[in-house]
Length: 241
Image (cartoon, rainbow, N blue to C red; front, side, top):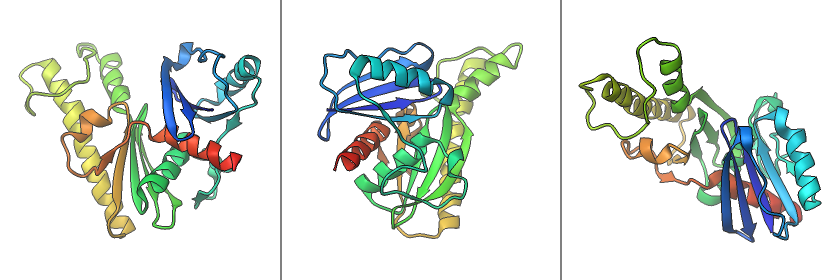
C-alpha cells in the first residue's frame, strides 16, 4: 500500500491507497498532527510538503513508525512532469502534484484552482507541461485578516450567502468573501485563458472550499477534492514501476 501525505500550512492529510483505490483518509491540524496506525502494511510513502520546517520531524516519525523512508516530492524531482520555470525551488510541491494529477486524469490544457490556505491557479499545457501560475490569499486568510486587523468586524463562519447585498455586518462579510472569491476566480480564469490562448482549457478545482465557491460559477468544469492525494499515489506508482 501507498501512504500519500499532503502537508499544508493549515492541515495535514493522509491517504492510504491500495493500487488506485483510496481506502482511508485522515485529516489533522498541521500544528498537532499524528500518523495513522502502524498496523497497515505500507511499502511506500510519498509526501508533498509546503512546510519545510516540519519535514525532518515528519520524516523521523515516519521512519520510526513504519520503517519506510518517505519520498518528498518537489518541482525538481517530480516524475513525468516537465516544469517550465527556471527557479523550481520556489514552487510548492502541492501545486506540481496537482498539475500532474489533473493532466493524467483530465488531460490538457488545464487550469487547476486550489482553494487552500492560499488560492492558487496553475496552468498545464496540452503536452502536460507546467507553465506557471497565480497565487492569491485564501478565503480563510482573508476572513481572519478582517477579524484580526479591525476593531469591530467579527470572525464569521464561511458559508453560503443568501444575497449579495448584506443587511447586517455578518451577511455583508459573508457576501464579500464568497462572492468576492467567485469574482476573483471568474476574472482570473478569463485573464489566464486570454493569455494562454489555447482551446478547450479544462478548469479543475480542489481544496476545502472548492464546493462552496464553485457552486456560484460556471467557469469550473470539475471539482476533485482528492486531486493532491491522487497525484501522490500516481507518483508512488511511477516510482515503483
